Image (cartoon, rainbow, N blue to C red; front, side, top):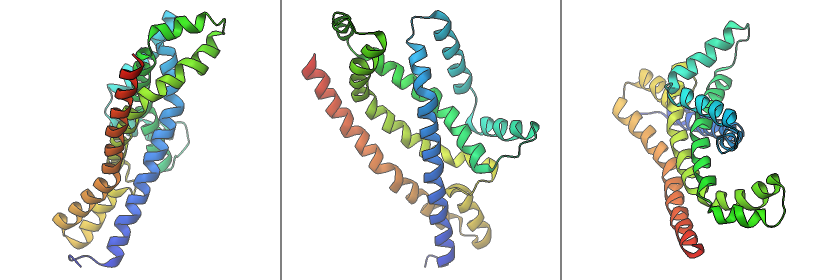
Amino acid sequence: MLGLTMQQYGALLEGAGWTIVLSLLGFLGGTILGFPLALLMISKSLFSRLISSIVIIIVQGIPLPILMFAVYFGASLTGYDPATLTAAGLSMAIYSAAFLAEIWKGSLRAVPSTQWEAADCLALTKTDILFRIIIPQAIRIATPPTIGFFVQVVKNTSYAIVLAFAELTYTARVVNNASNEPFVIFTIAGVIYFVICFPLSILSRRLERVTAKYRKASS
């Protein structure tokens, strides 16, 4: 079947499974780290905005494979030998956080200033204003680009090949070394990536249209 054995097809599917696991780890970790960063970026405190901006600029300026090496070997210097999944997941979480924070900062700022002003009139605390009024509206704005970014996270898992983590790209290379069918193997890998990413891309575009209609109707 296209020059590959069932075992080799199974290995590629297993690699795809680890790609999904790593994607979820990177995205969820990025969410946990990125949300506080986004709040710091819209803070009235100059120090908070400065620190968060510096962190984001540094992380965004480092290529993901280099960040993976830094996390993996940096942990080794402390005497801890991390699993490749741990190192790759943490690296992708840090990397994702920097970009998600930018997306969510823009979404929070896109909420009309009249909403903040109207909330002030209700004598709510700043925390209540943020979590009960502003963030629910920002979520509608942020959802399409956030899903779109998740597509990039899935693709970026291929960089974990530098740590020899058995995600899809690394597994495809291993299978190719055994079968010497590069066109077939990497075409199959590409199709698997497409199957994972295409529905997310469609969902992101549809939500973007819905959000645009909502914002137009509320303006």
